[in-house]
Image (cartoon, one colour):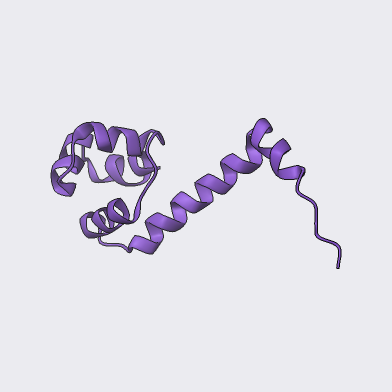
Length: 87
Protein backbone atom coordinates (compact mmCIF):
# COMPACT_ATOMS: atom_id res chain seq x y z
CA UNK A 1 0.00 0.00 0.00
CA UNK A 2 2.80 2.44 0.83
CA UNK A 3 4.46 1.72 -2.50
CA UNK A 4 1.32 1.86 -4.65
CA UNK A 5 -0.42 4.77 -2.94
CA UNK A 6 2.51 6.96 -1.93
CA UNK A 7 5.91 6.10 -3.40
CA UNK A 8 4.92 5.50 -7.03
CA UNK A 9 2.60 8.53 -7.40
CA UNK A 10 5.19 10.79 -5.77
CA UNK A 11 8.09 9.30 -7.73
CA UNK A 12 9.91 8.33 -4.54
CA UNK A 13 12.17 5.36 -3.89
CA UNK A 14 12.32 3.31 -0.73
CA UNK A 15 15.74 4.82 -0.13
CA UNK A 16 14.35 8.35 -0.29
CA UNK A 17 11.54 7.45 2.11
CA UNK A 18 14.04 5.83 4.47
CA UNK A 19 16.15 8.98 4.45
CA UNK A 20 13.10 11.19 5.08
CA UNK A 21 11.99 8.96 7.97
CA UNK A 22 15.47 8.61 9.43
CA UNK A 23 15.40 4.80 9.25
CA UNK A 24 17.18 2.15 7.21
CA UNK A 25 16.09 1.19 3.70
CA UNK A 26 15.59 -2.33 5.04
CA UNK A 27 13.02 -1.01 7.52
CA UNK A 28 11.13 0.79 4.76
CA UNK A 29 11.29 -2.29 2.53
CA UNK A 30 9.81 -4.39 5.33
CA UNK A 31 7.03 -1.83 5.85
CA UNK A 32 6.29 -1.76 2.11
CA UNK A 33 6.13 -5.56 1.87
CA UNK A 34 4.07 -6.05 5.07
CA UNK A 35 6.90 -7.87 6.82
CA UNK A 36 7.04 -5.17 9.51
CA UNK A 37 4.04 -3.74 11.32
CA UNK A 38 3.38 -0.04 11.54
CA UNK A 39 4.08 0.95 15.14
CA UNK A 40 3.13 4.19 16.87
CA UNK A 41 6.63 5.50 16.17
CA UNK A 42 6.60 4.60 12.49
CA UNK A 43 3.04 5.95 12.15
CA UNK A 44 4.18 9.29 13.54
CA UNK A 45 7.16 9.35 11.17
CA UNK A 46 5.06 8.43 8.12
CA UNK A 47 2.52 11.09 9.08
CA UNK A 48 5.24 13.75 9.23
CA UNK A 49 6.72 12.66 5.90
CA UNK A 50 3.44 12.41 3.97
CA UNK A 51 1.46 15.15 5.74
CA UNK A 52 -1.35 12.98 7.04
CA UNK A 53 -2.07 11.63 10.53
CA UNK A 54 -0.63 8.87 12.68
CA UNK A 55 -4.20 7.61 13.09
CA UNK A 56 -4.38 7.05 9.33
CA UNK A 57 -1.34 4.74 9.49
CA UNK A 58 -2.41 2.94 12.67
CA UNK A 59 -5.91 2.35 11.27
CA UNK A 60 -4.35 0.99 8.10
CA UNK A 61 -2.28 -1.44 10.18
CA UNK A 62 -5.31 -2.48 12.21
CA UNK A 63 -7.40 -3.15 9.09
CA UNK A 64 -4.54 -5.20 7.66
CA UNK A 65 -4.36 -7.28 10.85
CA UNK A 66 -8.12 -7.89 10.84
CA UNK A 67 -8.03 -8.93 7.19
CA UNK A 68 -5.21 -11.40 7.90
CA UNK A 69 -7.06 -12.82 10.91
CA UNK A 70 -10.18 -13.45 8.86
CA UNK A 71 -8.42 -14.71 5.74
CA UNK A 72 -5.74 -16.98 7.18
CA UNK A 73 -7.36 -20.42 7.58
CA UNK A 74 -5.41 -21.44 10.69
CA UNK A 75 -6.09 -18.14 12.45
CA UNK A 76 -9.74 -18.11 11.42
CA UNK A 77 -10.24 -21.66 12.71
CA UNK A 78 -8.79 -20.66 16.08
CA UNK A 79 -11.00 -17.54 16.22
CA UNK A 80 -14.13 -19.52 15.36
CA UNK A 81 -13.56 -21.75 18.40
CA UNK A 82 -14.45 -18.79 20.64
CA UNK A 83 -17.95 -19.08 22.09
CA UNK A 84 -20.17 -16.46 23.74
CA UNK A 85 -20.46 -16.65 27.50
CA UNK A 86 -24.00 -17.60 28.50
CA UNK A 87 -25.54 -15.27 31.07
